[in-house]
Amino acid sequence: MVILANQNKNNELVDELSKFLFSKLNEKNMGITKFRTQKAIFQIKMELGENHPLFEYLPYYWYYFGPFSNYVADSYYFYNDLNSQKITDLTLNQKEEFKVIYEYFSELEEIVENLLKNQNYFYKQLHKDIYKYYAPSKCMYSFKFEIFDIADKYRLIEDNKGDSLIDTFFKCESKLPFDSYFTEFSDIFSNFTTKLDLINEENGLSKHWDILREPIKKLWCTFAEGLRVQFKDKVYENMNEQWDLEFNKSIGILNSYIAKAEELIIGDYSNSETSFNEYTNSQKRILDSTIGNYLKSE
Image (tube, rainbow, N blue to C red; front, top):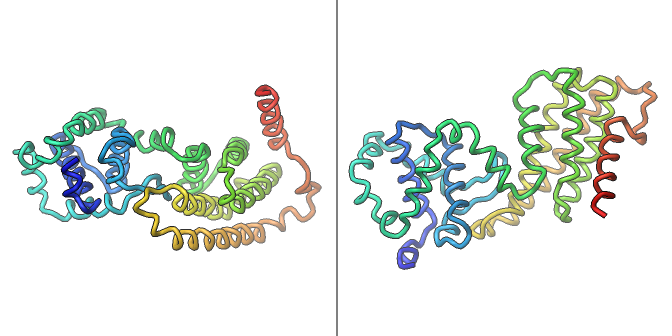
């Protein structure tokens, strides 16, 4: 398309789309945060589809809180630094202000309108559905919302929640990426899950929750740093070496987090008859389920 030949920087098209999104939000008296701007434009990108000429001009990578684009972040800060009246004025003559969009990409108006028509969904559910439908690994929805968020948001955990959390860990473990890049991380995740299960069997998960929260959160953050290396748009290829180094550094830090937690907890179990080499009840449940599903598929 002719318009793309004139757009020699990703941020020009991102700016145009961000400005259009903000003007539509302003029409509906809806506010938006940096986080939701990231998710809104990612959703627009995915609805346009891979064959759309704009797709590659909205570059993202997966990170701590889902898909992230530094170009979108720059646009958000730029337009929110402007006097709010300038954004308001954009709605007065949209056809002229957004000539590029209306002339070349008129389908964007319908996509944005549909995105904003259900405000409750936009603010409360959109980011979760992005994980559900677009996350590059099947483990990510439960890892983020049912493991990381629990550790991040809750200072205490009830005794009766332990079994459910451990089951989620095991289910998540079974869905971790199989490629060699995540092998070391997967081993750490598996070993840590086994130890959490042992602690839970001794009714110690809630007792030691303040110690366990940090390594659980670091587990997700380390995984996300690996995702950034493996799942990104082409424009970020030049970051491969740096991001790979940071991921490997985080693996070492994660090990130290877990080792410190074990050091603080281990005294309570020094006389326990439970062996790290035995299957616990929850491991048996997961094992039975896994083998059963495998046999059914044969």
